[in-house]
Image (cartoon, rainbow over all chains, first blue to last red; front, top):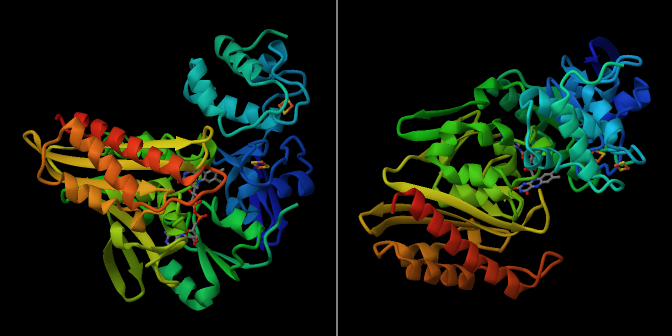
Length: 157
Length: 288
Ligand SMILES: Cc1cc2nc3c(=O)[nH]c(=O)nc-3n(C[C@H](O)[C@H](O)[C@H](O)COP(=O)(O)OP(=O)(O)OC[C@H]3O[C@@H](n4cnc5c(N)ncnc54)[C@H](O)[C@@H]3O)c2cc1C
Ligand code: FES
Ligand code: FES
């Protein structure tokens, strides 16, 4: 099937099999390996990207379902040396150890802060409850997202 | 890497178009809505449809509105939308109670009400909630539209009365004066399927129960209904003692299976406790 998917503002035309999953289109075909792929069962959330402005688990979306739609991946968060405040928060508060869960966490955190600029810790925990981290124990991830809430413009670099 | 087997994909542009596509591809075709049940099943080859008809563009199937004394919820409404609907939450707090504990916020962005019901998983939460409030399901085929009470919607695990060339289009929940509703669930961890859950709706007349609806999930209650407990409550006092008794009756008449979520006795204990808890909360909300 011929599809056009706009990823991070750039349209990509591809001929794909209907069974191709969005996560594989992004990683294998477009080379956007920032989106990780972990459990394959919609549980770990490491594959979260935005589809038409909503975070979704891209291992459970067919690439053909994204035809004509906008996708935003973690590659669109920072620009060069300039990091998004949520990225800065993860650095400042040690929200990253191995980094495997981080792209999904960042995409959910950015969405949360866009809609609720001052979320409580409980709200943050609920927002990331569909995402698993095997390293940090979540405390630092929650702190990282709070950091970004307190520093909406990040830190001057 | 889990990848589904090959299939044809078509995106429907209207309900008529979707029905025509389903008729064209025949019984081996399937509707795909959020895909959050179907795609995992296809990866595991538990489902192997030859064609998928994508209904995600059908705006006719979206929307939550009050009309004709009913709350109408389109089949394509996402879990997150239903949870966010102040109107739905005020009229039927059971829906917000249930949605808050269905999967996780990201899955709720994609999964739909219609997909959840049509999936007919024996542990599905909304089945119990819609059963409790005696919702009706509106189903469309090429021949026309029919309305089926949710209590007659499920024909067994993973099977419903929706035919291969039909679409579930809407749920309609009758709005009753003086009623309240609530949902109580126990899961093993955040976002997990229920070990057991109970939904209740009570319509009060003074201090008495005029009508009771109780839905159970994950515990083998036939068609998700706790009918004997409803019969017991109807016409009697809305009292703590009777709510507790209703919980025991519900626990006695369901048929939980022992599995990794727990043994039978534990699940019966949960049914009794959760039913009683949901009834209390429903009564409070009904103003009793
Ligand atoms: C990680 C995870 C956790 C979950 N936890 C829970 C939970 O705790 N509680 C719970 O209740 N659910 C849970 N779910 C299930 C989830 O809520 C539903 O699977 C999902 O929302 C189903 O909706 P869908 O739109 O994705 O359906 P799809 O996967 O698109 O479809 C499911 C079935 O319904 C059919 N179908 C869909 N729409 C229609 C229609 N309009 N007419 C006719 N047939 C139709 C499809 O052909 C298919 O057979 C969980 C899912 C995941 C992935
Ligand atoms: S890889 Fe998609 S949720 Fe785990
Ligand atoms: S940092 Fe390693 S999985 Fe989260």
